[in-house]
Length: 287
Image (cartoon, rainbow, N blue to C red; front, side, top):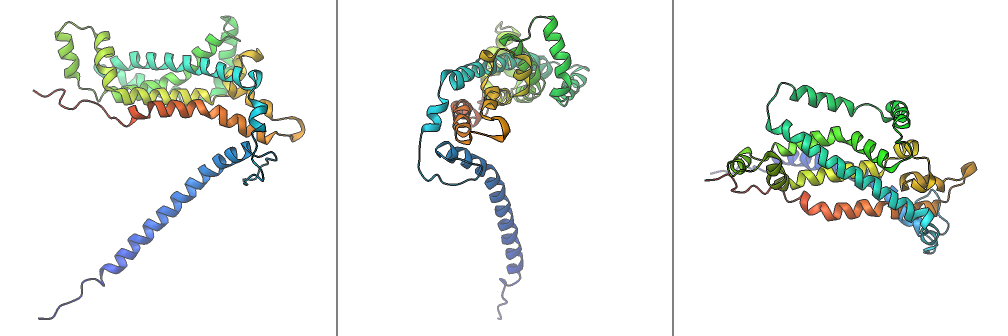
């Protein structure tokens, strides 16, 4: 009985699959390099006494750039202002988004979809187009050059997309758990705080990180709404490293960027466990 080879027909298919995988890996490496090169420049330039625009290993390592920027008026005060603005805006955004997403997720109405589409449309409006009327409004209500006014605008600008995210995560929590709580006499607010929000921890973490990061890197809003230099956040004070006639202190700029990125990295590290945990609903509605 003659045996026929079966490997040769599969070789062209295997080679095509391998080539596609190699092409995909090469594309991913190019994308990774596009993200890694700016980060490498920031880290290397912060330790380079002769930093420039090129990505190069420093001839000698120094901490003089950090010594030059780690001053109260240059770094610490702007970072504190950023933490107050972004922390207050994020807290207000998460609370309002949860309260707004709860009725949209739990109660059916003909106005739900038009409302969601309307707030989604507001996210597409460019911030520069609405700053002129917002500035005029803040002048009328005496909120210009105030931290609380900037916090309110930060929260208002991030709230539409935060509601969308929060509602989608809230839809994944079974309503039967709330009905059991209602039977025991809990109110809707109590079921939201004690049942829904703890079970959708990853969703709350995503909204928190997204809102904080978007506010943390916002330059235009505090630049327009805040006038006092002592109230400027770090996203605005970083502009001070760009001197006149094209002279830029690249080493100090890189050192400030490293310090400026630290709070966001710490926030992600602290909340990353909640992101990978998933919804803790195992067996909750059985029986």
